[in-house]
Length: 595
Image (cartoon, rainbow, N blue to C red; front, side, top):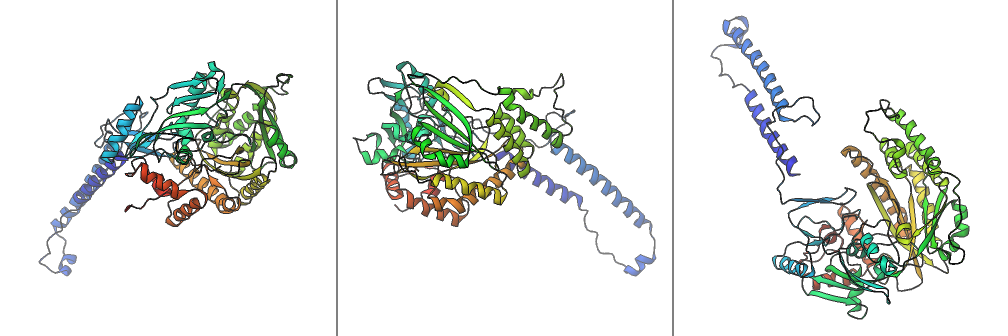
């Protein structure tokens, strides 16, 4: 931003100079009658005309030269030239921090990475005394950038140790900066693993805990429910230890505290025995899903549905422990990986001919373009969508190709839970995920399937260029009151539904158009579905409205679902100077300045 402002100001100054120089001084009033001037031809008149045209010529040459030297050629230009205006270099101490999808970004001079608890405690204390911002940020994977703050951030990537493992109790105490994959790898030797996983493994434990992240399985709670104790470094009260026995009310509130109550330094997690799982992928349809839905939820440890918009295809993915008696299933895939990818590859070649006539799908010997056969399915889907991402007919073709891919990918896969439960989410994207009650495990309300049916009808009626998949997962409830799946009834289950639009290009104009279309898509789902099904967005995916009335409506809505007063009270007590807050937290939960 600083660079663009510098260029803009320089250009405005240069433009004013050109305008000033190009205007000749006004001649003094003539002492003779204008009638005489028209009837008399003098030598001074011809000299004036000559000077005028010479002036125009000089101005034209000067403007051309100024334009040439003012705007730099791209790096691959065949010749170089002097540049009068250059971008001002960014200061060395200015850090640019963005989330993984590149949808949110801040620049800050204060990005701290303490190496141990003592350094973290000193940093929080000093920042509080100076009233300097210190927003906790994890791996930056949250789609909404909930951990970003221009004023300053603290990241615990250097506090990533496994502190203690109790093999008998199946618990592990870790520093909050450890990443999920690193944690899982380090406790393998103890025969332990986490109860459940989100789609990816790069999150820091502190971050995945604070936003209420989840995996899938109607019998398994969100990840915050796996935490049995935690160490919180607060601005006002220093380091406090919380658990079900030590200040249980604050413990449950802080487990999903959005980084606003303190910096999570350590957590103790209840683990389970490491085991092999059998993943079964099958293609179904909504009619059959309705018949078997209750059985699916109750008989599978992990289950999720992937819906393909503009088709009746539902991809059902279940994961269960390998049977000790029968062993892994014996299954020979009907199609090879190349056969499963064939339809997608053919569509890509056809689309290239249509959208990029100059490009040849066959590689030339000196081409650096990867072979089409080297792309994974998600990579090829991104390339297909990038050709015309907002054309509904084109997106429908891509969706149909995806449905065919899944039909030819049916089968089984066996592996350890930390290997099986991941999911390739594709490239950069906008995503909105909502959570809503779906009855109980013994008596599902079927509201989860009704939600999907209405959503798909909305997409088709509004002709939204919605790519696949619409992902639906389930969890048991959480005792953390700020969790979207919080409930006092232990047998309640919740459904999580995610809609998506990919950002398969770095072209700024195209990304802006996709962003506008996605927020229109999200707005339509919000208007038609959220209140009807008591749906609330995932904390890592909620977006703050720019419109004042929409923001006030969101604030009021959050107060109906969550204990906002108790949360704000805890913020005032633990962080009275709001050093842990950022713009998003202040907008969602505004605190009165006179408190």
